[in-house]
Length: 64
Image 1 (cartoon, rainbow, N blue to C red):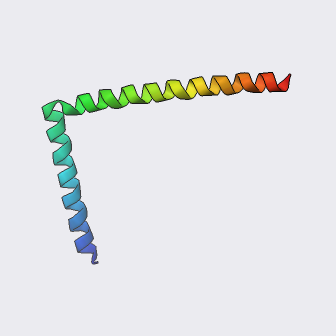
Image 2 (cartoon, rainbow, N blue to C red; image 1 turned 60 degrees about the horizontal axis):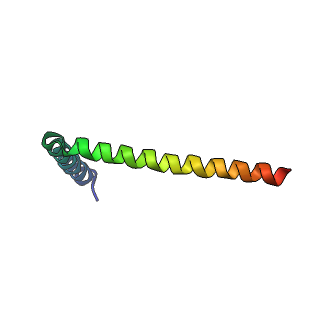
Image 3 (cartoon, helix red, strand yellow; image 1 turned 90 degrees about the vertical axis):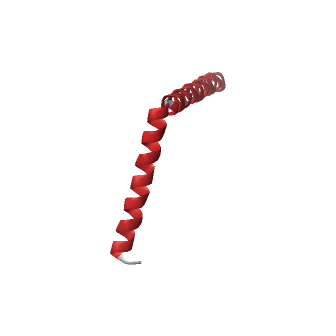
């Protein structure tokens, strides 16, 4: 594929991605998506913290 064709594909991809981002931003859905992702990340982090704490307790019991 020629360099020009790759530039054209990259340009159209970027333009469509920007169009989608701006459409979501204007509709207010982007904020809801961000809040949903933040909630999911917080809950996943809490699960990881809880499992790490239980592993540390198990290591403490095993070390005795």
